[in-house]
Image (cartoon, rainbow, N blue to C red; front, side, top):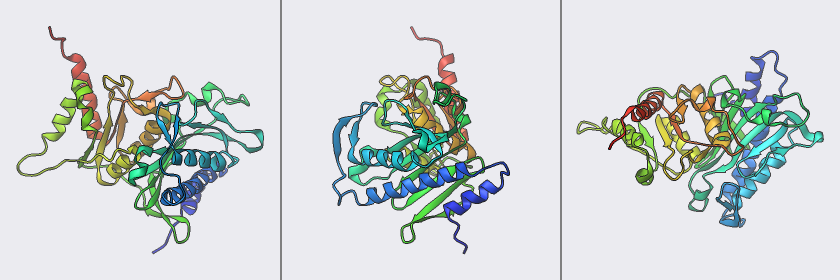
Length: 337
């Protein structure tokens, strides 16, 4: 069987676009290189004293883990010096990181360097999520117009999952493709091409412990899904890993839906639009699924700040549309009393 590497696959995709100059292809390859370095650190974390927290609280109000810092530094060193990037937008930074003239390119990369990092010490799957935009303004500096943009303007998005194996999944307008890192040769090898998220929802990923804080529509939505399970057959199973990237990948492979709805504690939602929701939304739509805040398409939301948060329902299209219907029905209900 022919073994197609990530670099070869990206090169083939580039040849289908006559005007392409190869910069995006090279950038995707460099993100893959950063993933290899992070994967190596994750796999040896217990041996090189990078488990546990740094004691620092980041801009999100979360405790920074040692591997968070490793992943952030790796993305800055490799992607920031790829020669194709003019700015990096990181979940871990208060502001954008503009790239110096010597390394400056035409793309902006938004990323969560290590999603699910609270699970590191328990050896649960974690990952790196990224979205790529082409610089919009003609100003030599990076302006707000360059990054305050809806997700449908992304030219590519993807993630690298560090689990039982390391996989690189990306979408750039030609479908969703998955590559598995072969540690023996240090290359990502194509393992799943043109992934499609179709058919019935088999898995529901949601943190049920947040139920006391949910709006009524969430209970209605889950109730409608759970009705499919009867004495004859259990058609939907609950699967919640607690790492967004891991939950998303599982649902992409098996067919399912993930939800982190806004609630009374987080009325705007908890997940970050630029670093998590928008990149995964691009991937899920290319795979035939959908992503919504409950009030509309994730890829149509324009961020109003660098760390814009959002509610998220993402996965099989029918379940996302059902969630939006439940939200509309809740709004229609007359107030009681």
